[in-house]
Image (cartoon, rainbow, N blue to C red; front, side):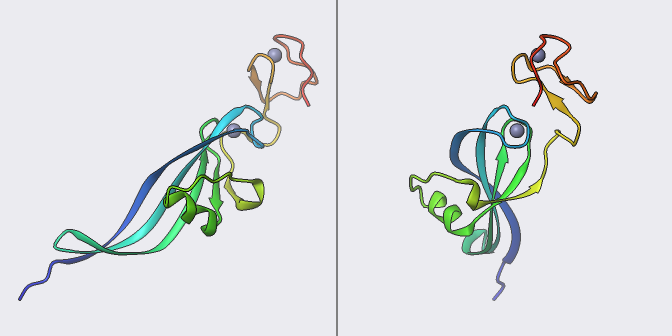
Length: 125
Ligand SMILES: [Zn+2]
Ligand SMILES: [Zn+2]
């Protein structure tokens, strides 16, 4: 008897988004939730999932957070959940780096150390 068994690493987008003001880049973004897991399958039929990890990616600057497992599971189960900052651990900052500034008024971006936006005069914070 020949069993076709396989273990694969999978990732899946969870159908969840929440509007937030991004801590990293300061613009409006969405938390987009996805998960990764190991999957055991037999004859291409998924049997068992384990090693779940949940992540949040910002839609604006693509920063990535690890999401607490408890909250991630609830989202996976389709529950209404509100993600708070306490549920998130920053793994990777998006394109915004130290010293990079983005004007909240007009969206102008610069790496220069300006106190005011050179385009519209808005004060950088
Ligand atoms: Zn952002
Ligand atoms: Zn500006």
